[in-house]
Image: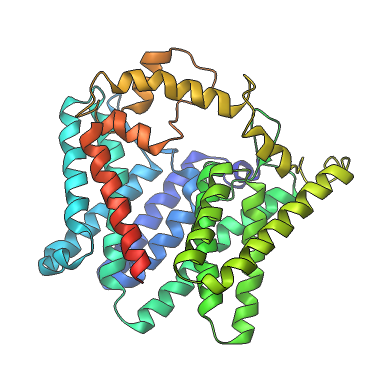
Length: 384
């Protein structure tokens, strides 16, 4: 893979990680806001390396790049909270977030793999920490404009690698033979959901922008982003994006809903037409580009398809849930419980279903809090 040749030694990454943390520490001490912006760019641009081990303490445990970065985020968030304690309760949804984190923390006590549970808790806390810092540090209209630019800049590295993977005809091959691009992320699914977030922001910027030249620039980025999203072959992300468009159209921009639906329908017709009338074009350039077949596979129950083994996995793990339905098995325990329940499994040990994963890890109590948090966030978005 291109990224493997780009950085072919973990020692280089370790040194780079230490240097990055030193630079980030200095920047955060001088200016939290700039430090936050640089942190967002690094977090997105270096996601591919998050599982690479950085520090090893004898035979006790190892810390990968993602864990080190997560700890760094938490430490500086705590420092900010200590310096400005009163600000913490002004953050929207902070009480229900604390409740979810408290339930997750308690679950470490009865988790069979407490280190894995702690690692997962750090990862989750780091996401909420970025949310907390973003809300409290971006106050003025200038801050908002700067944040808008930073979010777009953060997409440059993933976009570059995604385009390279299309041109070089590389990617992560799945069981159906698709070469799925992953940008600078560790997996195509993570890249695809990042693209959905950026694409949603770009569409909002495009709709609200008054300058025509800037509007054209946003449109070009939207087209590029959409092409990359298609090449990830992530059906979940496709569905998420379609749902977001539909909700935006119904709740906020009804006049644009019809145009959006027509555009999507025309694009689907174009894709299907190319697949039907030019069946040999795939082998020449576009890394087995066949999104219509990918969509059709979603309704296939072929034993070798990812849909089939996911359904089988969910059925197996539903029984695990009923063993501890209220408190769950502990945060970060899904993969271990999956291994115990299924033994050697032909598919992935990932849940591919956050609700089932949380039901097994945190039980009905944790799942209920998580669903309430999502509903509250959706309610706040509708009010904007």
